Image (cartoon, rainbow, N blue to C red; front, side, top):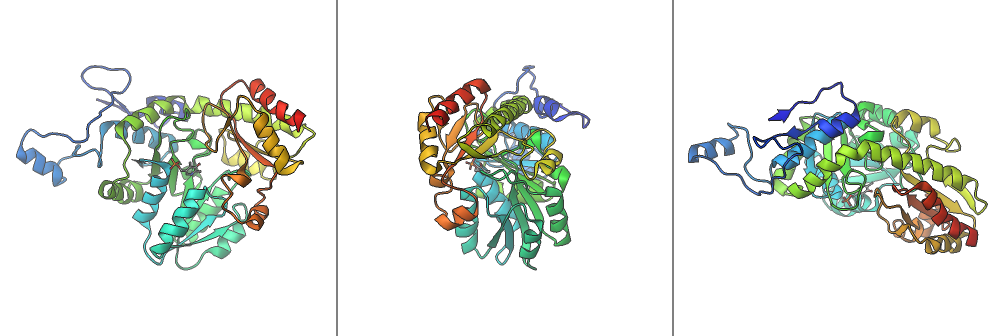
Length: 397
Ligand SMILES: *Cc1c(COP(=O)(O)O)cnc(C)c1O
């Protein structure tokens, strides 16, 4: 039995209740279907299912009930008609691009994208004859002038990593419509608890479920959300043929994690705000990047576009440069030194020498990733403890 969801439900309720399947056992929490294939009563029944005359499962690369429960729940939260799950966030982006683009097509993307996404576009789509132009995320006129007659996709992350620049999704949605292109938003940093791009004019949302959706640093996964035709049919067919599908066990982990997504995101946002305000008053800190601060140049846009909150990522620049940044990171005792984000545990990283180290020094400087910049993914510890851990390094630096 499937329990239908009510379209009037809010995001938190959808996260708890949508995609509920109950077997004759009457289990309250969904079962995990750890099976790669499915059996049939007869050769005729098997043939009918393969022919598509009868709905149902055949093989877990195509569909699996646990994976379906996760995709139904996430689709409900994002407000999309269809959702497919992938083995990682990168597989979600790969599936979206290979299902919808052909040789000769052109992508316009923000230059602040996740490093592996830029690698996928330049190295792998590039050799298939799909080209990409990069623009500043917050400059709508730069997006407009980069569009050519071959442009089929606009690809963005907002807020950007690590400087939290905000892309105006409504404006880009209109630009995409006017040019026959598709607006794809990697909604990893916000999740549907904070921002629902499909309601703002985006056509497709991709996720790395590895980050906030799991939220506890356990499993690798991804998802694509959108309409029944492009996502439910084209991206689904790519996945079932080419195979970067999600494991049922990981789907169950993510499915359960969606039940606490909204409340976790609110806690990440509240602590990030406290930390950002505290950092602004510290003498060794020359600048704090957080969309919730009044000093953020796009604070108003962020407030409109992210009704659920400003996110859990705070970046800040130390006037003492790289030496001060390394000193601060090394002085922490609780924060984890890792480039990962979206975990219950707060993490700290020096972007210029890690996530953005492959950029040439002058490109990095132009992008604003200076040597004194530090990024914190604010976790779910008491914020006083996060502040105390950072204070030690600031006081010594
Ligand atoms: C981590 C990340 C990805 C890639 O996800 P994986 O699950 O690691 O493959 C894509 N986009 C953003 C913004 C990310 O942070």
